[in-house]
Length: 477
Image (cartoon, rainbow, N blue to C red; front, top):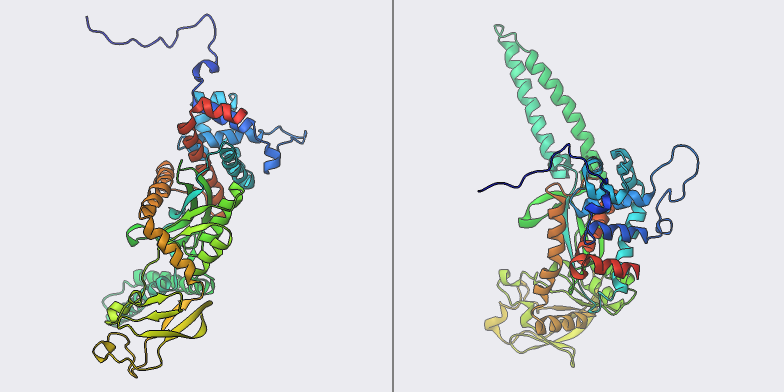
């Protein structure tokens, strides 16, 4: 006879009371969080109130709140109010915290006041992974991704946006003034209260916009975000523009662990050297290889990176407008390293004439003093009205770029490896965060929040690689 599994009676009593330990298996990830935090020297890492003052009402130990936050970010619960609710109903958290139930204000204040300590814990876990020999390959992918800030696009202003608002309000004022004049001429229509009140609002709004215009123009970035002042309007996927932060990260190509991360409000270009230095410091070694996309291509930045002892592999893009102008592209001019000359498509030799400095970059200038003997292709060489010879400019350290390009040509899988490595962590963390991404404001607080997300991601990766019991044994070794 068919039947269903019967539920236990809610009023059923037991001879021996149940204990929390019975509800948490030995393989439960919550045990990893407990072992990890218990092994940390929180005072040395920069946490506040590790040692109680012994006066007034007792507070929670930082280890309790740190465990709560790590558990929350591991399980996609970032809000302090939601964490408070979980403390009352989540059996795993009851076990982890010993049935302690901090309120949401205490939880939120801990994250706000212990940003330095939380970031140190994130770095400490990377150091533990290094001690477990997780980064033997020394190849790391670097990339940046835009994470939405707590700032609506309508609350972000640029000079052009403010000016458009001012123009719209001024036109509306002119419209209402003309309407009021028309009503004054028409003696039968005496209802002018609506227009008058609207006009007063528009005039007040215009004063606000004029003050905002001054603030925007005086800002170093020519941009003002009213909700989160540190957030910036940036181009995201499919050239859309969102108010966000640009999170830089370096990811190990073997195990996809995040070695270094930093929250910025600037573009990718110019970040390569700084991120590489952070990776070297985290691993305590200089001989590493970094790969990134074309958004990081900057000659001076690449040179500074290689001066650190690292090997950089960054593809370059052809930004020349030669083809649109109908003239030969620079790539058709071949450089002879031994003779230090360029050979043009017609076979003519361009000699090294002098050195110039353009926008902080030292360049050697190559050209031929004699007029080109190939009249039929002369028009394709230069657009100069005076028939001046084509000039080629070469960076004095261009050999670094040439060697890098050879490595990329010999290893066509490098761009694919970069995408497979660094895009995965970004996608995973964004999925955990949800549609709104960050829940805090200002660069420092957002950096703390990102450190918790990275720590949770790395913990989950290590549990997948080593297993929960294996990771706990390695931590306690």
